[in-house]
Length: 139
Image (cartoon, rainbow, N blue to C red; front, side, top):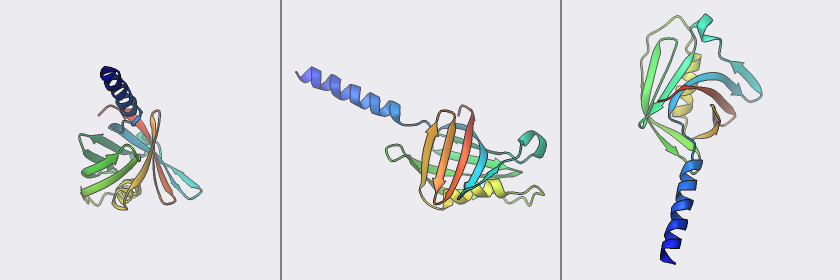
């Protein structure tokens, strides 16, 4: 009987672990949604405005235009929330607009973010703003 209980506990624990989304990897910001307004990030090949993000080993690194921001984060899989910790950011004074990198860093600085992972798409929501990312590769 005891071994049956141990097996049942192990099966439940492994099933719960398998349902926690894997947020680590390489991501590209695709759009910023404010209220009902959707702003798509321009095609990176033509506009050099892509906002990319790498999440691995407790560190989050993002860059767009020419600035880079990085810092630690805490992801709570059960509640599916992400919270940024101390972040540093370069301020290169680039000609390209930095609105996309500020969208990411601003959300990380604003408190807990609700995270939803749908296949290769990750949504971050805080208040009435949502950032939509697409996975571009592994961590």
